[in-house]
Each structure stands twice: as C-alpha cells, then as structure tokens.
Image (tube, rainbow, N blue to C red; front, side, top):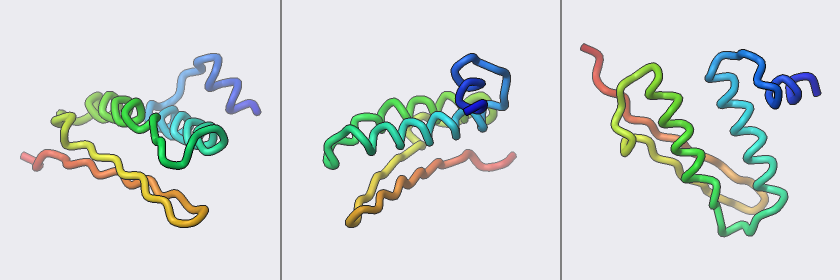
Length: 87
C-alpha cells in the first residue's frame, strides 16, 4: 500500500520503476473492466514507453512495437524496441 501511495503522491523514483508500476496497474485495471478484443490502452502505453526510452536513447518512435496475444485465460504483452547501433 505504501508503494501505491508513493506512486500517487509523486515521490521521486527512477523512471523505469515508475513505468513498471504504471504498466502493472494499467494491465490489472484493464483486465478487470474491458472487452477481451478491445486493447484500447496499448496506444497510450506505447507513447509512455517511447517517452521514457527517449530520455536515455535517441530512437525513432516507430521502432517501438507492442503486441498483445491472448490464449485461453493468459495474456502476453510483447514489446519490441529497435535500438540504434552503438557508435
């Protein structure tokens, strides 16, 4: 519960940790209240991932791909990020 309150109150954390918490909360919320064929949160999730990644690495936003697969009662979120070559 303390982690949730810290998240809501904006306590300083590393952005990767915050992004992970947001992802977990978003997926839990979406699983409970949406139609299985309507992944309407994916565009917002993709935008947030691009924003976080761009803080550390210059990427083309089109190089971030999300894919949600469903099999029976299991959902798998696949994230593919094409990173630029090291110079």
